[in-house]
Length: 378
Image 1 (tube, rainbow, N blue to C red):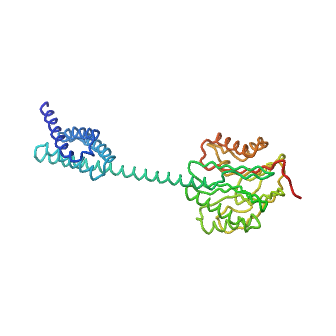
Image 2: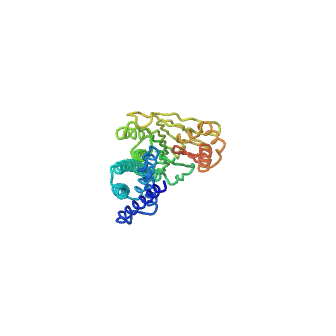
Image 3: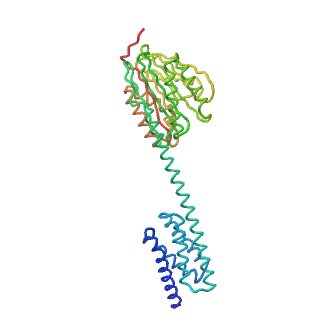
């Protein structure tokens, strides 16, 4: 037994020396950690060649798999196979007696190494593809977030008699929320809008850009907000996939009279909170992108201390179990109605975040508060 063990050790040493001599031609790709795995591989190979049991066969296969994975982290498959399979098998062959039994053992060992390297290479490819896919998704999200950030106004306009605020908190996966409050002093009109695009990523962010520029571009030649919505819907129906929908609320505030005309394209919630009651503004037409459609308008007279509020479903549907909901939202606004529009917007966002944690959908809102010093022209 001692002689057999000694013979196995001598065989390993001869094989290691032969392998080192061959590997010396690749000094930049063989390090100590890989040589340590080669030593372990040689020790197992010697046992396997002496007694090729199923248990040792499994151990050899696992050790070869680990060697293959380690090698492929540093070099390509062709070089890894050449150094850690072909040169290794040649070194083991050179350390053995030239007989049929040894030849059969080496052939079996070579097959085990080949199979293990194939599995290691397949795993490496899967990991590489997954990494590239994740990197691609990460780049897409960065681009989409950049688009989204550039589309949203940096601040709301200051208009006498009104207090405006808008917020957008993107989810981890970028969606397609967008808000806008724009003053048109020559027409004495402030346009307010909020859009919620179905879908995520660059496609949704790009569609948000289309909604922004299409609806904004039609304003100058429009006589009513419903006409703007109809033209926007027509363009989206023609140019976007049918599975992509946009719910949107769009209004014109006539600053001299404090009247507002609201077009609601399948959006909820939209309401006015007055000191006495809440007034819901129901949809006046379908979501955009479904097909040709006509849109009606809801005309309302705003009074001092009225609060016009609309938001995306990222607020009302937020929650780990039961959603935040419209009723809770209305109570929150009623309890804090004396705050400024910006303070009220921050309160709503804070409460939703406290309730739901990290949002799974974009959170956006628009608040229009009529101040007590508003002057109405008769």
